[in-house]
Amino acid sequence: LAGYPGPRRGRARALSLGSPRRLHCSLRDAVTRKTLQGLLCDIDGTITDANDLHAEAWQEAFRHFGVEFPYAEIRSQMGKGGDLLVPDLLKAREMRRFGKELSNYRKKIFQDRYMERIRPFPNVDGTFAALAELGITMAVASSSDEAEVKYYIDLWKIGKLRGNATPKGAAAHSHPFP
Image 1 (tube, rainbow, N blue to C red):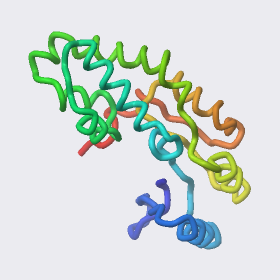
Image 2: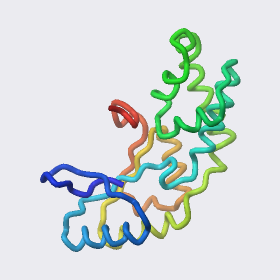
Image 3: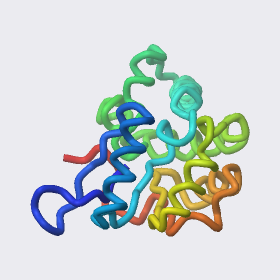
Image 4: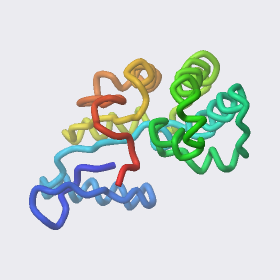
């Protein structure tokens, strides 16, 4: 979650999730002091339980192109967009030969066979509703494409509650980017 003003005026800082009670107290305090401008929530692995499914899809895609990585190695890369994950795992020659095809293949199999298995973490809809009641502007962000982001928003039934959604392409680089 981001958007809580930091020590220097005008600069946002991340709000530590910690325990649910700590988060609730932090949010209540920020709303009371009128310092909270909004929340930016990442989708994969933050509000959806999707990281394992993404790792499985990547492993299947790499295997399809004759490259084998241990599941744990791929899973440790979750949190990166494919634009960073693929070059980190493939050799330069493999990147040139089939890097783009690999990413496209992974996207297709993920949407066809994995995406329907994604579930939100418990109480996502209730949390978003409570934040909206407090008047907090919310946005969801993802390195996923626009169709996947729309799928998630429909899955959570939060379309009317969110402020914005930022899919892949809204930023120059996916996260984490130095």
